[in-house]
Image 1 (tube, rainbow, N blue to C red):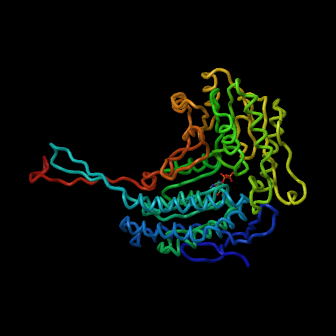
Image 2 (image 1 turned 90 degrees about the vertical axis):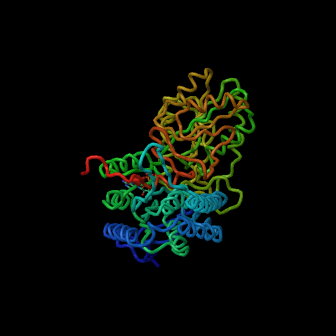
Length: 488
Ligand code: ADP
């Protein structure tokens, strides 16, 4: 049976083409979904705007909106296992990872509920002035949330929770590959009591449906996570409409290992930083700089640990890496490995797709480690979005800093050292939005996240994340008994 989508609070067949959701592990069919048409986009946005203007939502009290988000968190937790399994079917990530993403989504909903209840407006007084001002924050209206396939549910709630907490309506366009989990989330928001019309989940192709949503005149903010090219395109649309955007884009994040680092901790952290999610993460620590004095020792250990990682069916326990999202993406990853070889790189681990037995049914690629490149090589500059680590040696710290910053991206960086003063100095000169010191890929819901340079603009998360979905209004209260000057 073809699956319905969620248009302005109604479950119905989209009027666009029927698309297939397949399990990346073996290509079996998960579902057929009737995707949205351009008419569906228009209808969903007009109704979202009406729901936002006419329902009590935009004027509701923060604790009333928070109540719904608390319920969303509880429902996500209650269905955690089912959601994790569905997400694994959608994008092929191992269950251990999808379980963590589900719990992170619940935590994000709860955090935003609490933040929403406790945000205060600002009262400003001037002692000599005969007025007082109050600065209030108001929702912007309809928000477009456009999300990628690599960390669904977590990325979706990261946008929906603050946008709705702020009193907006949201039109969500999930990545085609992960539509099922987004539709499941729509059920949860509806069950939690979100008034009808305030949320639509429009499944469909990015270049058609995502683009139409962003272009629609009633959409007043675009919150996007995905590739830099798409992000730049959406920024142009937003510039024309004079609306704000939050863009969380790609990365080629450097990890730096200083001479005094704990080799064992660093090796394990680096392997996790690049190979978890099979490297399909914007924050993957994909460019490694090791001080030459420990280069051989650390590289040997990284190769040993990586070679022992289990790549396999994502529903099997103890699997570290599942398949890549699809065959086209595997091709792209492999082409980068070929490019690295052509640029003079040596593949010291991996480098060929895995096709033995059951693995032939999915797009499996092993942990791949490449040495011998210069930072200028294209394979060290471009985002591969797969399990490929490039490893470089450095001698001089100033040169290291220049190389680490010599990237169009600026999403994240890792530093491994026993000396925190040294780490602090380095952290302050790296041109990135997040620095992990002696850890990697850890996330706190209360800590702002976003990129420098081509890795994006705007920040998500944190207590103030809700305010990025609002605009300020200042209200002056006259206190004087006297008429304003000039008025006779
Ligand atoms: P990824 O490589 O993660 O798929 P994309 O930037 O292509 O990165 O996709 C992220 C999200 O953006 C997906 O939901 C996708 O459908 C959507 N998207 C892709 N192209 C466009 C576009 N031109 N306009 C709006 N959304 C788009």
